[in-house]
Length: 438
Picture 1 (cartoon, rainbow, N blue to C red):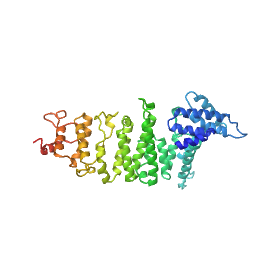
Picture 2: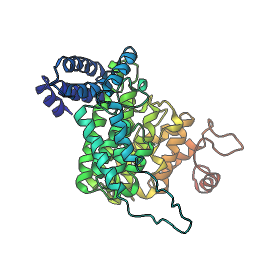
Picture 3: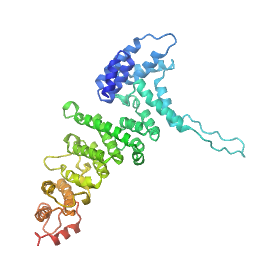
Picture 4: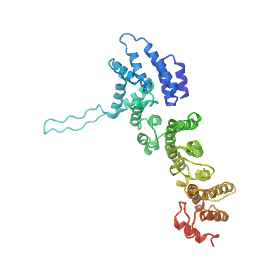
């Protein structure tokens, strides 16, 4: 992005390059700068005299109007678009033609035979080829004409400037040009549940990606995440930036899916990013980011070989717990927790001199969570279940866990403990074997 902006600065004398630079600013949420660039570029385009019979200026103006459209000038611009259409410079129509060709809307249906004894047989069509050509045209159009996927005022147009066209292009190119298609999806998708993203980067298509593509695409996602995190708050204030929340949730989701084809080193890097996001108070404040962060943790964890899981399991057990040490989230019910995908087999098989200190600290941390509020108790006891099932508790620690479970706060005199994900028979079994109860 920065390299492209530098190139645009060098060519600022050309208004078309100013429009392209503005498009990059729109995609970086630098809206005020984009607005100024488009305004001056439009003035420059209109000031350039056209050669006789040339429609170059009218064509440039038609495309530039897309990014300058506002509530105040909407009537003036629509009138101008109608005037330019008379000169065969209809930017709206040109864009719609490209979109229709990707949808194959222009392909007429076979006419029925007139005679009763004649039956038509469908022939071979090359619509896929024509759709791919239209998809490449859509991408080229956005780049050459400086059309961003969306702008601040796109709702006035009733559609994104180029988002729909680029989304269709991504779907058409998903099989033949998967890397390009995923890059387009990163630009136009608005959530981890976006239907186009789910089709473009399905599990089968993720599994078919080359190692080179995974490396390039994961770098793009990581760059977006690192750039977005410090911008989640607008101007450092309390207001949240929906733009960067949206861009980050898509980048997190794509990165999580790339874990399917990641090397062990890459998967561990993805896991580290997920843990960092999980711990970041600015990230977890937004419930829109909870699901993609959880997906990144789980999918990168599943991509790790068992030996690496054993070495990193304690890191997951030690991630913050809602309700402990002032760690809070916007909607606790939507916030994931490692115990939901961790298995006891993922933890180290024995306590050693090397891991004893880590395990002791984690167990003490979980014990605090089990005696906290209902949310922290549920999450901490779920994690502790993994440690207990793996046989990693000392006798003293097991006794402390039992007392935490059967504390007066959560256990009535004639009932079993509440506020944990454990089933009743587990408590009854624990009663029969626990030394402190006897």
